[in-house]
Image (tube, rainbow over all chains, first blue to last red; front, side, top):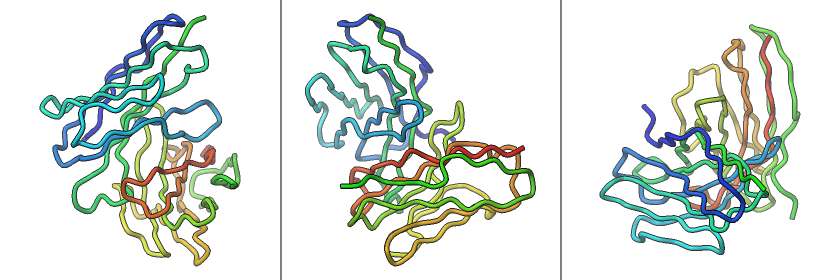
Length: 114
Length: 113
C-alpha cells in the first residue's frame, strides 16, 4: 500500500523554466512533509519541508505547496538549473507510532536541459 | 562536522549468506534509521533506533534486523540473503528522530548473486 505516490517517474525541463514535481498521499494523519534530492552515488539530502498547518513554504528557488483537502503537495523550482538534475523524493511523517519513520514516494527524476 | 558514514560502500554476496552493514551517525545524533532503495519502490523504511532501542519498524521480514550501540553507531543484518535483497541500503541520522531533518549516508550497494 503506497501511502505516498509520485506518479511521474521523470520530468524534463529547459534551463530557466519552472519545474513542478508532484506528490500525492493517502494518509490523513500525515502532518509533516519533506522533499529530498538525490544525486547518483550519494545519499538523499534534505531540500525543503512543510508543516500541515501551512499551505506554502519558500526557500530561495524552491517552493513547496500543500493542498490538504486534495492530499497533494508540489515542489516548484524556478528558475531551473542544470545542477538541479537529480532524483527528487517526497516524504511524509506523522500519526502515532511514526516517530522517525519517513514514508517516501518512488521518486521523480528531473532533467534540466541547458 | 563529519557526515553520516556507511561501510562497506559495495558488497557482493550469494544467496543464503548473511551480511552486516554499518552506519556511523553524525556526532550527537541519537536516532538512526535504515531504508532500502530499489528501482520503482523508492525508499522503504526498515527500522529506527534511538538510544539503543528499536523505536519503529517497517514491513520487512524477520531476516532483517539491526541494533544500535551506546555510541549511536548502528548495524543492520540480513540473514539468508535472497536475490530480491539486492538494493541500496541507506542509513540516516537525526538528533531525536520524528520530524527532525534526517541526514543520509551514501549508502551500501548490496548485490546478491
